[in-house]
Image 1 (cartoon, rainbow, N blue to C red):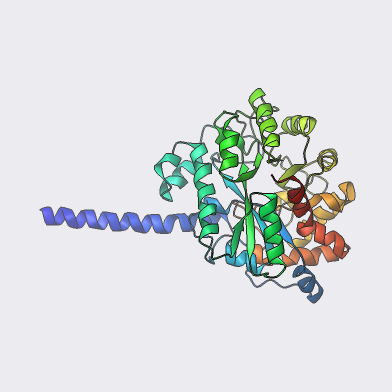
Image 2 (cartoon, rainbow, N blue to C red):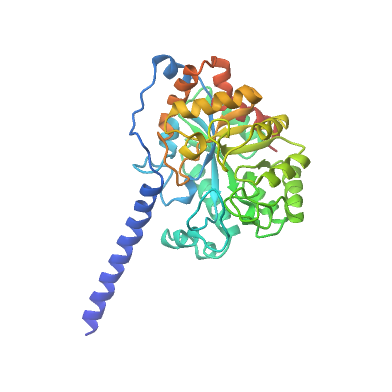
Length: 386
């Protein structure tokens, strides 16, 4: 009898291990799809130009998923080997702490959470199962560990000094890459403005007040009430600016955008978005919002998925960039892929050369392309990191 129970327990354990190994990978394969397989075609001119660029992307949710980013994967959109292959010099790794079920761009409440189940299935530390703050800190810890274990292939940028040292090194050694930490939704503060300090200490240098639902900080474009910054939210913005953290207004309600822009004294970023001028929906920015963000000196990252650009190829991305540049100039537009953010994209990070090619097709000159593909992000970080 005891032997039979032992065998049953062993079988149950093996089944559990198999489920934990298989299910997260299959979930990610279904949620982070790529329409076209590598390698990605581009003109000879685009390939040559792309290798000269400092490519910087403002948004990837890769830390959410259960894979080693130091190893090349057959799923998802971003890992260190693919960043290097795609000549990506700098990737913002933005953490996701909570998403509602049946997530949509019109209206979501905060009563459900997909990430709780994901954190359990992916065997995150138990402290993360009930704390959004701990989920942020855990994902930050993972990126620190990747940097420490990368044999110099990946650098985590936390200061201007870090950035300048890395840029100088990369001029001699191109087969390296770097990243910095951002937060998608300040619900990780758990309603306490003083937790900005904990996020800064963990290495975060950019944070968005909201994600897909209204929170204690402010209203989301996809929330129920869609209000502006709360009193706590305004204190959060002040603390972020004092710490030299960048404010990211991706996913913010119009009222929250207005409130942030009214009090901002530093560049305001939009890590991933589209523009209503080419793709008119609740996710994207109006011409007036583009102008006011640019007035702060910020950068607007144009997304790579259909809801952002109303298209499924690099030409649609370049078209949105052309429209935005016509409104605010080439100094304020960048890449905002939303890679690994539960989106379907035309290529993974090795295919960004197709955007370079499409920008050439839109009539941009090489100096403008250098700015859009990463130069603008580099400028802001050089001037405004602590």
